Image 1: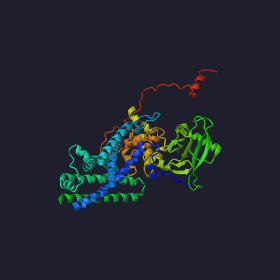
Image 2: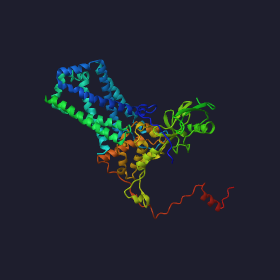
Image 3: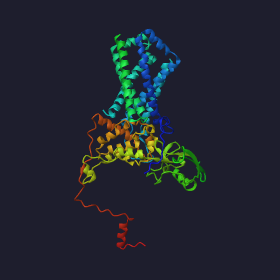
Image 4: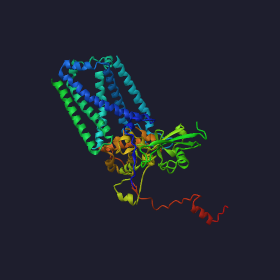
Length: 143
Length: 120
Length: 286
């Protein structure tokens, strides 16, 4: 067969972000990697930032003083929120990616019920847990 | 070691990190909540408080193990995201090697700082 | 909402690599009739409005898997999609994403088939001769059948790859179709091929690139649920990697029942042998 000209039609990174009318799990897929990416970058910065404890009390309090601004308080909460989401959604993924909580294979009878629908109660429970933790930590940050 | 082992390690470190990072977050950030439970000393990031933890050997071990697990989990995850961008075979190897170097460097730096704070 | 003689607007992506610089949308107007599917609309366009429109279709009953396309932002089989279920009188039809476009709505499925082939989609046994020249038969319980049957309904329509976020960037990712089929064979009690397939699925672009976005299962028009198959496959591969899961029982091979008279089953009334027999017996119903 003669190879004709073709036009590549891959969605690219837009395909990660734009989940359109697909289920919530496809949004969680992107949020999981977004929060993960944020957390590893934060870890490397945090490692450098906390190394100032070797330089004595004056330097340390100087560095910590920078973070007293409201911008950093908000960022601190964002890191906390990212961790809460990544940890709990990650727990769901560990369980489900080993094939648990998805139900057993069954004959496809229309209208089809997918394993994703079967894990929804578990997913909502995790969602409620995430919201509870977010609210509790927000309360702590505000007080 | 196949990819399966590295992936399994990713799951295991993830599960352990939920506990370790959760503990770390509670100690550093959730002072009010700890206060309700009668545990909070307050000012977890005050210099005296930081150095007090730095001088205790359980906390020193906690930080070193915590750092190793967090770096593995984070950098393996970062590699996953980068490799999904369809790199050439050579570029994938370069990315993997670079991330291993970043991991070893960051671990050495963090351990050095923790050890200095403990010993000094 | 939908009445006879209502006009449905089809915005179809056109692209001819020999002539066009880039893809563009062209509008067609198709009168609604009861039971109109997207494929019916495309045939109407091709026959009455614009013969140059290229799309791929064959069975028009969701069996062959040829007419997958991106309809109003989601992958569907055109023949399996009623206009009424889209709840819109304006349709935007594009070729499936995450493939290369050959012309208009026709995509190149070569990578899909290559990946399907790569995971060895057939029963693998140590005693290879028995597969090529069977002398005995495999014993499989109904429960063992159910454990993989769902995944065997795959017809390679490729909708799952169009839905998969990882396939959007990773061209080497095996994808839900191939991995789902890998599980279909690995879960089959007659199959002993996990060790051989692990080489094809346990690498940087293999089964671990699935992060359970679930869009493949949502898109699948046959209810195959590839996402479930992939997670169960991960469990099998992980168990094998840590040295567990070896106690899997393979289906026994037994000689076919012999010495018994074959039960006589009467041919159904519409078959030629039965008709001949009836004529021979002088049965004239005319």
